[in-house]
Length: 185
Image (tube, rainbow, N blue to C red):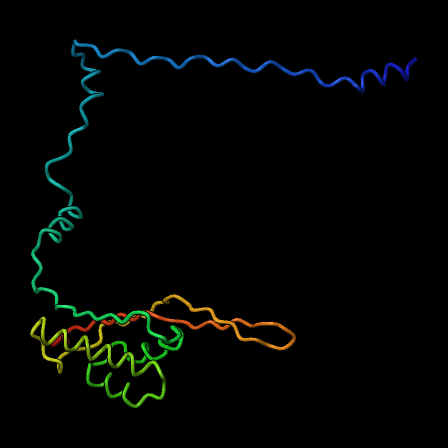
């Protein structure tokens, strides 16, 4: 008999508790037309002092002060979808970045890397943009920045032994050059 009672209690699921009832959200009190000092104090923000502190005054003065010298013009040129791997083009770009235009062209002319010729043509194009569009002299220009970004990758396959094929990635890149006049101190 004890076994039957244990079986009956084991088979019964636990009783579910009723869900807690939620109270509706309290409504906000309506705005009063009469002006009480407490209500006015809540509505009106605290007045700030008319004289700013020393640190704030310095920041405002720095923002309001006119800039003394206008920024030098930046001349850009872009080459897109070049059939050079970005990793190899970055090796050349890192050597040229920050150099005067003449030194950069000389370095690229004698570089054995394949990307050097493409970057040389791009820098020459940027120099022509500077002369024709901004009336700048090519002798005074430096390579301010040169960025190499990845372009789309062409995927090709080479047949191999036993009916297999291995992928070949033909990578492309986008190169952007910015030239600016040298800063004479």
